[in-house]
Length: 489
Image (cartoon, rainbow, N blue to C red; front, side):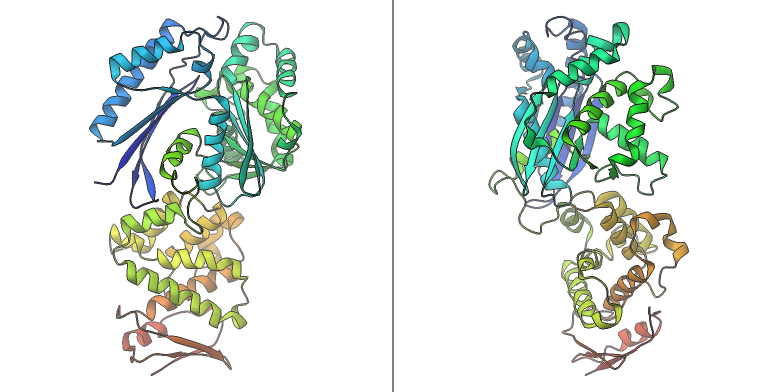
């Protein structure tokens, strides 16, 4: 069995656990995720940080069930970290000893800078390539930021403003929004100027919840929060609405019920940080501290970064669901050769080679579920599992290329649901055709050596074999434009 690792994160608001399973040296996927709103920080901030009896018991009970899951799923490693609420608590060590004694679980309290580093580590390794940005993780007791410059973490900071802290200090008693803003402003005055950035990477419940609200409002076609981007200028008014709303108005603004008691507080912090940092764009990160803890262990021998050009989700999908990996690599190689041979006629920007290569490599991934409707199965596999290292635009294009690598080219009606995320239909058609042609040329699964030459509206394919089945297959293909295809020995 592949190695499984459990990560538990005890925050002020929730205790969460994820379990990852490795499929090869660096590739992994999520097999279990669970949380409990233990609210361990409840009542602490108005009592000198002391953890209260009821929240302690709730947390202990949740951790007991987490441990049962870990045992039953046979995890080989377990990491349990605690953040702001335990950092601030005078009785934190008593709680840690209690859990160690009763559950045999070791809890490690991480400082705010390390917490920020874990979030940044997850951002650099699991989002599309990033050069310059500031990560923001708004928690229940504190907010962590990391400054990323030239693809490296150059500084981190933790500031004691969080949703539950604000709720208990200002919102529970008299709804003192102005005093809360003044408190936030004072705390943020400590933020160094080099944290200013045009791009924010948003981590944590508040920012993800706000991204979901934006996605619902615009009827966003991909129901995945990780990697979702939006313009601050376009949606900042919604932040202001939430910040100034009373509890009863939050539902009308799209806030989910489980966020009613912390969303205003979180958005007040987020809005203040946006203004201070001067950002123009937000990239939502569905990964955070837990993924950062996992990556810190997984990548300990590689400078905490994946090897160059390594895509973790693509490799994980290939490990688990591609049966004939040699054929998969061959189709990918032939697709790239065809792209280059036909460049004078398709005139597509070479940046799309990456999507073509990945789609060609995963073209038959749906077959692992069923031969029948494999294209549709593959589309679902990719839209729901190609989570890391790709933008939403890349992810949708790759999924659609897998879905439509058939004799028919996709029409506008076929792809209109994803129009906002796709390039022009001509590009989609050409890339789809190239994969279909590459697949036809390996109809006999011989992985034959092929050479291509496009001249005078004719694509000449040289091969030592007759490729009889390939010729039949090619005749059925719809081409994006009129040209001849000739196979010569």
